[in-house]
Length: 606
Ligand code: NAP
Image (tube, rainbow, N blue to C red; front, side, top):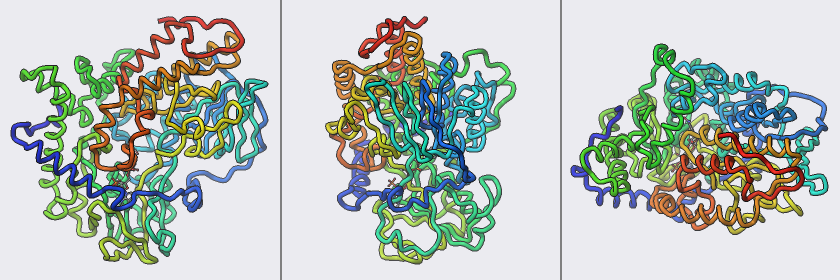
């Protein structure tokens, strides 16, 4: 076992830690320092321009397809691949970026890499006959793999790139969706799949004076190599005489701080809440291990990884890395004789113990005591995305790096020359916003288009009292459309796992409908109500956990969570969710869906 939890529950005072966590949460209370954001689409559109694509000009497309997929990231690629396997040919993918890849198209900042093991993160490794070079891959290799999937399944011919969908409107008379874009395309589609991703809309904090800054600024998801020079792999030579600020210390900042510190004259890192940062221990793929893998290995490994975040600890931990330490710790406690009935308590203990270790590790790496203290995270491991990096913490030992800890309050003000914290101005030439993505806004608004279902229904209207879906995929009033998200659906820290599950499921439904001549599929009112009730019923533990967490995008920035119960992932866990979908397909009745036209669907061969 790697990264074993060493501290013991007896040796630490959990009650005292709970108080400290609560204190740290309180310091970040949104009523004390607002955690609001600016809509970049409204005020900073130039910062959203695609720096990676050449301008294209093409004639508008006016056609009709069986399935239109909005989004060319992993979700869109897997959906198209599964549809292709199911014999569906008339597909279109519309993607705002200049190529496939989604999040990996946009995020090319220096140091960008995947913190989940590549062997479980990369989709369709066996199908595309590819083995990642390293255990934790750099962004460029992941982008290349997206392209590999697109080529392998012949998806490039189906895609319209650098194209923003502007409206998706249901037409009852034809049972078709009509999709319009900013390139004047007008496409009819029997089915639509919305796979726009949870992290597609970069955000800027609403800091006073943000427009006043006279230097250069950009968001990490649009890294400006024209300004910095270099590339993700080459030194950013233009920074050698620049004072640079990075705002934010989330998963993105952890990765881009070390290379920026290496190249800038001086780097100021503005921190509101430190991340938990554990060892990375990356390594090249062992060719002998790879050559001994047997067919079906990837699915087994993916499911084994996801199982470590559920109560299925009987499933062997094949990945066994920093993500799964708590599962290992609980196993250890059970082996030492603690009863299974205490599983939740054991997990809580393991969490406190792990965080003690994370904080102690900082002291052993960061020389300056005050800086080390400021870098310590005081929250549960899964309150924010756990980070893994071997160079981030040592970066704070560099002479040219200053940690500006905002004591949980955030940057106070932006001036024409720099940033103010606690009344002190820090003059810089460049501000880099590592401030993340909008997750809380309406699905279609976040994706940037107008979505109207039956009788012009919009999602905010439908979900004015909170979300309601069937299986997270179907929403009544929006026939023939599939929503790909984690809300009311399965959730895994390994995002592509659930994308794969959802894409397989919807491909089955689409294939059946097309084969049987079913023109219209809509969730029944009772199925939607039952599923939503189940989501709420099973959300209690997660809501309680999130309420105690330090604010961030996982918990609505520490704001109200009363409507959140309905947007939670399926609380029975991802493996149980997979079983529910499998059983539903095997049952063959399309239970919970109202079908118009065509013959009865058939049972899936199991
Ligand atoms: P993020 O986790 O939302 O982090 C944003 C950071 O900006 C936080 O540290 C936040 O502080 C800080 N911040 C916001 N406003 C601020 C202000 N006014 N002053 C000072 N600091 C401010 O965004 P992210 O780092 O881009 O990561 C987003 C997600 O992308 C991750 O959770 C993960 O899912 C994904 N990601 C994945 C990988 C990977 O390896 N697979 C790598 C990078 C990102 P608070 O914590 O106080 O809010």
